[in-house]
Each structure stands twice: as structure tokens, then as C-alpha cells.
Image (cartoon, rainbow, N blue to C red; front, top):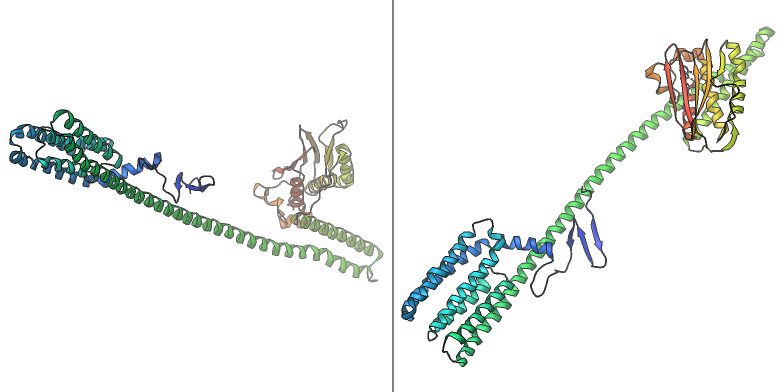
Length: 486
Ligand code: ADP
């Protein structure tokens, strides 16, 4: 939709606009000239022209015919002026009427048609006025002038204002000619004027009302069109709104179905993750008190119970973390602390495991690195690093695990690089999702529940950073993430 169309209300003017056109109950027009405000006037005139063109042509044919046929009267009642009157009729007025009639077939006619009709009325009227002056004793010429007035006001489609001017110009011309070029008594001239002034006044009033109602009709039609357009537009809006809502509902429905599926998978996975260590704990707890086994075996069982207990604890805390993240209940407890201290403490935590596995645990920055102080949630940053380093050691059989930091103006970039088994390209996005592990065979070998990276990703994002991975299968992986400095 339009650049969406709006219905705009102007409180002061009490009008409403739609697509730039005004919707109003009241017709705005100039009471004297009957003209509409600019834009409407233009379209009214165009419409008026097209509606009037045929009528105009018919009226001009008839008027031309009458102006010609009345020439017969000249012969009957004004024989001495016949030639002169015929000159007026057949060499001035009728040729003019015919030219204008023919010009009505040109596309330029619309521009000057009112002016041309105006000229025709004046010339035709002046012609008859001259006849009146020349043959004042013949009242038929005075009747002819009345015909000119009525044709000018009502017949030839001249608009009110132009018809009025033409009417009074002809009357003035008649009076001037009568006074200066005839010996008709002034009482007679006055009595003629009684008729002609009345004819002009009646003509003016009639033409005014005819044009007023033509304009009213135009205005009402315009308003009707406008209101229809508003209704159409509203319907279109409604249709597109309904389509949009339906689409949104479909998306929401799909999301709900997907999240339902994810929940079921989550529950199935969880029950598996909890049951496995729990079954081992219960099983070995029974064996640990069984006198059938040797004390060495009992110690081994106790160790297994402890390992499974730890694994259960880690599953449960991972689940707690995931639920908190999902429920949006993570709380940020930022404070300023020394990053160097945090990294050394994390490295200390893993040094023993690394030594046991025969892997070098090293830092990718000089030992005497300047102290970096940042403001963020230390516990969460620690959890991210612990998860990544734990994985790196877990999935590396030989070589090293390196922890690095790079400082930029506003953020810190951390990376954990290993020379482990690497991750194939198709698994690189998936492993950041919950319960995604590369291979079940490996999982069995390496253990884990597929929650660590999902939690780490959420925590990095919660702290305002991003996490990504570069890896080559069989050669190693580098997990990197950024954190704003605070
Ligand atoms: P978990 O390690 O408990 O299975 P994670 O979400 O931490 O769960 O990791 C998901 C999977 O991503 C792992 O099971 C493993 O397949 C893969 N992965 C994670 N870190 C590494 C790494 N450093 N090298 C190789 N594979 C890794």
C-alpha cells in the first residue's frame, strides 16, 4: 500500500485528507465567480468541457442555422438594409460561428473554448444590436436580441461569469449605439432597457443556479469517489493485515511446535543423562557392601561412585544453568578485577589434569604481561574459560592447549587453542546447540552431555560478546570469544 495512505484530519479546518485530496461535507467555492479552490477548479473545468462538448456543438449548429435563416426576415421587414444586414450575418457572424464550431474538433479547443464562445456571443449580439439601431421601427430585431441573451446565458454552454460579462457588454454596446447612432427617443430606449436588463438579470440568476448545481453535482461525485477510494483502501489494508497476521500466526505455530519437539528431546536426553550415572551409583553402592569382592575392588567401586556422582553433579548444574538462561533469569554481577589473576587460577585448576594426560598447558602471552583490569561478571567469564579449556584437554591426546588474550580498545579477545581431534565443517555450528556432540562413539570415549558449549555461547552473548570457532579435523581447534572491557 502506499507508502501507506492515511486519512489525515485537519482539526482547525474541520477537513480530512486522503491521498492529498480533501474530504469535506461543505462545498468550498467563491460565491461571486462560483470557482472552486485551485486544484478542484482545474478538474471541474476539464470535466465540464468533456460533458459539454456535444451539447455545445449541437447548440452552435442550431444557433448558426437560426442566425442564417433569420436573414429571410431582413428581406421582408428591412429591405433597405438587406445587404448590410446580410453582410453582418453571412460574412461576419456565421463564418465566425462556423470557424469556432470546426475548431471544436481540435485538441487545443479545451484551452480557449469559453473565450471563443464569449466572443461569439458578443459579436452575434453586437450584430443584432446594430440591426436594432439601423431599423428601430422593426421590433423583431429587439426580439432577436432577447434570443441572443437567452442563448448566451442558457444554451451555448458559456459559464455564468463569462455569460454575464457578455450579456452586459452586448447591452452596453446596444445602448451606446442607440444613443449615438439612432434618433430613437430616450423614452423608447428606456423601455427597451426594461426588457433587456430584466432579461440579463433573469439570465444571470438562471445561469448562476444552473452552474451552481452542476458544480454541486461534480463536488458530490468527487466526494463519493473519494469515499469509495477510502473504503477500497481500508479493505486492502485489512486484507494485507489479515495476511500478515496469518503469516505471523503460522510462524508462531511452527516455533511452538519446534520448541515442543526440543522440549521432548531435552527431557529424553536429560532422563538418559541422569539415569546413567545414577544407575552406576546405585549398582556400585550395592557392590561396595558385597563381601564377595576384595577390598581393592571395593576401593575401585567407591572411586566409580565418586566419579559418577561428580558427573551427575555437573549434569545437574548444567541443567540449572540452561534453565536459568532459557527463563531469562541470568543476573549480571559485574565488578572490576584483575584478568591475569583469573587466568592463572583457571590454569592452575587444570595443570594437574594436563600433566596427567601429557599435554602442555600454555599461555599465548608473555609471563610478565601488564596487568589487565576489566569490569564484567567474573564468575561467568570463568565458567566460559573452564568449559572451553576442559573440552580442549578432553579432546586432545597429545600436543598442547594454549590460552591467549588480545586486547583492543574496547574489548578483549580470548582464545583456547588445542592440537586435538578437530571438528569437521558440518559440525561447527551444531556443537553450539544443546546436546549436540560430534559422534556418539567419541562421546562414549570422551564423556560429556553436550551442554557446555551451548551454555558458554549464551554466557558470552549475555556478557555482550560473540563466540566462534576455527578448526581443522585431525589437527586441532581454536575457540575464540570477545568480551567488552566494561
Ligand atoms: P560435551 O563436551 O559435554 O559433550 P559441549 O557442548 O562442551 O558438550 O561440546 C559439544 C561437542 O563439541 C563435544 O561433544 C565435541 O564433540 C565437540 N567439541 C567441543 N570442544 C571440542 C574441541 N576442543 N575439540 C574437538 N571437539 C570438540
